[in-house]
Image (cartoon, rainbow, N blue to C red; front, side):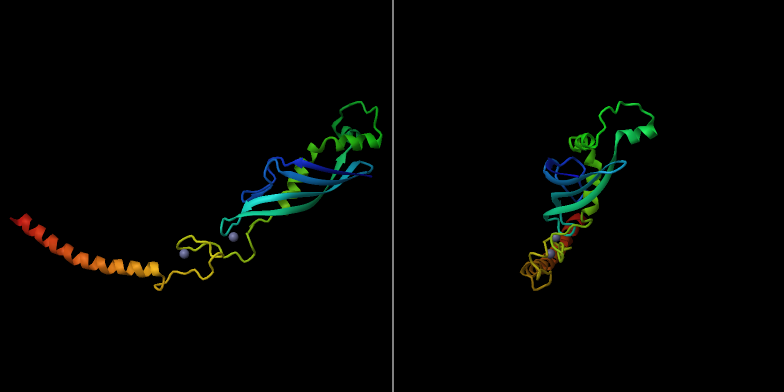
Length: 186
Ligand SMILES: [Zn+2]
Ligand SMILES: [Zn+2]
């Protein structure tokens, strides 16, 4: 058995639309390689930093992710049994195979992607009780829990003042329209 720890730049696709591991950011891998009859059993833990946005209020989110995975990598000889390829296996001692896998962590990418995507929050939120956005003005309600739109709001009071002016202007308007109608008749 052999243990390997690596830090690698994140490949593409370690995420979903709303959250994921940014491409190129560090992915920490802790692997345990065990020789078994068919090949090498790789048991691992992946740690990475996620970036995304809250599905309720769209605030940026950063959180760390840790996921476990396990995959059996078959020796080329066992694959040959099914594929019929006759690659020379002159040096097939277990250590050689283990180190080959170790040097070829690229094979881990699909396994890694599955482990990360499964561990992602499907509906990431900035905080469990995020109140989302005001449906009327788009303000972030968590910043301002008492936020509301009622007549006591000074902005609405100001609008009420405007509508009062509007009705006065409306009566003047009808006066000018009458005048215009008189002009048209002449
Ligand atoms: Zn939020
Ligand atoms: Zn609002």
